[in-house]
Image: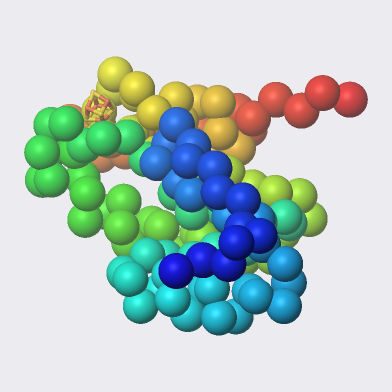
Length: 121
Ligand code: SF4
């Protein structure tokens, strides 16, 4: 499916990073989208939502909200790469407090944290 020059990395947050020649980008993106995957650019863009495993279930962990959040936040041009993390409960196993913006579903709403991604100078 992918060109032989593609380098693929599977991250701990279930994302595939694919490094390919620019000439193959459009064709590769088309194939991935056809296969049901969402494709985002790397670099100075807001990343797709880095979410937990929703072990508490779709409703209790807020999967519907997370999907909507991803549609809103992912893929915007920003001055510096921006990561947004989501956790479906206060255990926060996806480490949203270490992202630029972290969202944690609580019993009666959401806690939002800003500025968690430390940058070395
Ligand atoms: S953050 Fe909570 S709901 Fe999400 S995987 Fe971790 S323990 Fe489960």
